[in-house]
Length: 306
Image 1 (cartoon, rainbow, N blue to C red):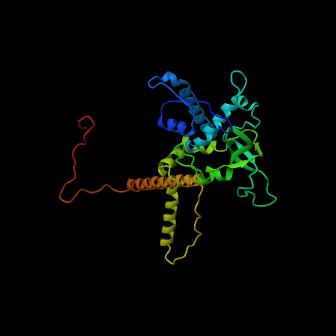
Image 2: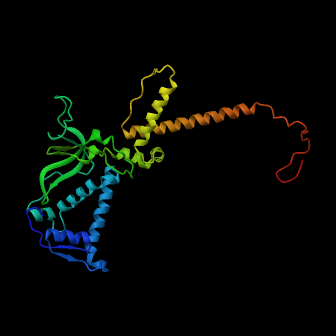
Image 3: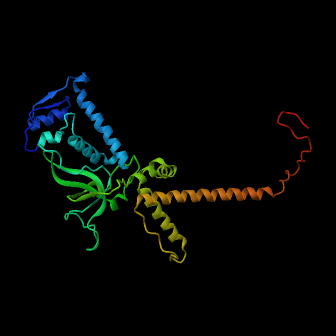
């Protein structure tokens, strides 16, 4: 592990573990099959890490597809957290406590992008720090930290799908910025939390999500079809009004689709009311030819006449 030698490994008899240890020439001891107690410590740790990662994603307002960033963050904080003897696993390994700032996952931060990435400042007088979302710590081989933090630019977060069952992370967010200079916004803020709750825990957000079936491409294709229909309706080949630009922000697309659905519903309700108003003032429809009108007593609800 890094420059240190692994003396022994312990796992179950999964073939991928056995082959991996053989390739690395690391001695491995195995748990007894059918005896969960021999592997209970590892299973309990796995359950705790998974539950903590889920809570971390929920508090940050990020969908489950961000799990690989969250679980690395959780494992690192567990390593630097003091144990029962008031000494962390990080201190036992390196001989000193972790010196970086402990920042919550998904918190609003300001950071200076590295020169290797595209410059986010469009002008030389723009602020040197840009707003972003904290993504964790860059841990080097051997569990070493070289004072590098990870962060996503806040402008890139607007393009992500925040449905809790979102399948993928957009390309710009798969590789966060690496920076050595980062500041936490105070008071502590989680910028993705509001939109995450709006999409997943409100009737408006759920209605739009069900309409779109979690596909961000649905509205883009529909908008292209609508633009084509507008061009076809214009007989002289020109467009009296400028064509609406394609919106790439998924949140705006969801709001536009929801507003469109509500407008259609209002139109239908207004039409039904107008039809009912027209029917009230019309005379009764006469019976067909050759059939005399019924002049007998009107039946009651109880089968009696009056």
